[in-house]
Image (cartoon, rainbow, N blue to C red):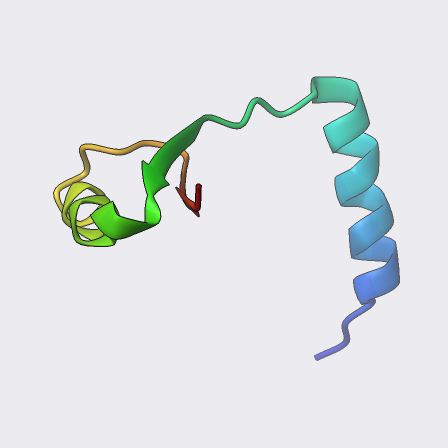
Length: 54
């Protein structure tokens, strides 16, 4: 088995530049981390769940 992570990375970045990925971010206050985990486990949050302070 051979691998060329550098070539794979270049191919990925080329595709990403052509097809501009869309990232959905859902913010949760850090004191609601339990809700964030529950939402992720139940597939209620799509994309990325981020804990924020302040």
